[in-house]
Each structure stands twice: as C-alpha cells, then as structure tokens.
Length: 144
Picture 1 (cartoon, rainbow, N blue to C red):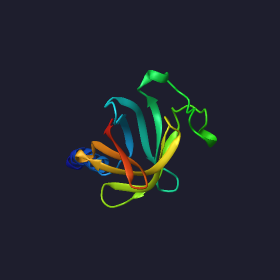
Picture 2 (cartoon, one colour):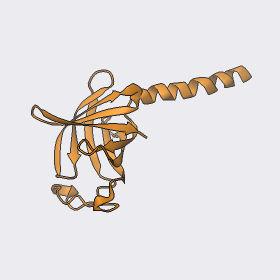
Picture 3 (cartoon, rainbow, N blue to C red):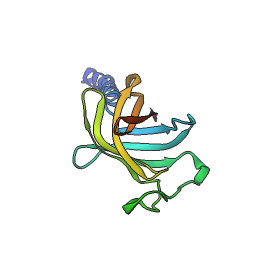
Picture 4 (cartoon, rainbow, N blue to C red):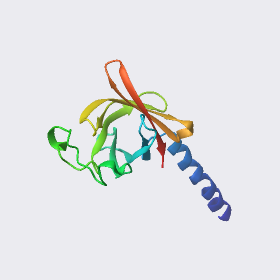
C-alpha cells in the first residue's frame, strides 16, 4: 500500500508536467515583439466546443492604465475593458505541438487575424502568430 502511494506521488507530477509540455493550456506572459517587454497575462483554456481560446487575465504594461478599454475594437468589444476579454478563439490541433485555424484579436488596433500557436522550449515558450494573407507577426509568450 505504501509503495503504491509513493509510486503515485512520483508519477502524478511527472504526468502533469508532460501534459503541460504538450499543451498550451495555462497562463502565459505575453511579450511585445517590438519592445521585448511584458504586456499582459493570457490564460489559454479549452472552450465548450473543444477548441482553444484565451483571455486576458492581467495587464502588465500600465502605460494606458491598469485596465484600459478596447477603444479601437468594433462590435461587442468596443470600449470594453481589455482585462477579461477573449483575444484568442477557435484554435484546433494542427500536428504535434501546433494549433491553427483560429483567430487572435489585437486590442491595440481592434483588428483580428488568423492565429496559430506552436509550443517550443519543452512547453515553456509559445510562438503565437497572427497572420493576414502571407504576412505574419509572431510573439513569443512565456509560461507562467
């Protein structure tokens, strides 16, 4: 009995670590690709339809205040707080350690783009790309 408990105590953390390394689900520090500075914390989660989505849970770049509004957004996000806003949605598996066919919203300009994610660095880094046609912009996010 004691051996079973000890084995479970060793195996469960290793299993959780392996799952974390193979999934983008969790919290990520977004890094501005132009300045290299942290901007926000985004939590990626599995949506009700089975795809991956992500919402802003904290603003780290306070140049526009602790909870700026999405003044450039159209539709239902217009003038809504960025904290709590869903900025990633519809991401589906696209091979090992990659997700694609989703969308990403850039609250700074209010536009959304085709999105793709790729886990790197043993699951500790996430390459997040937003694309229009052939042009893509990539940010590297760091697991929290």
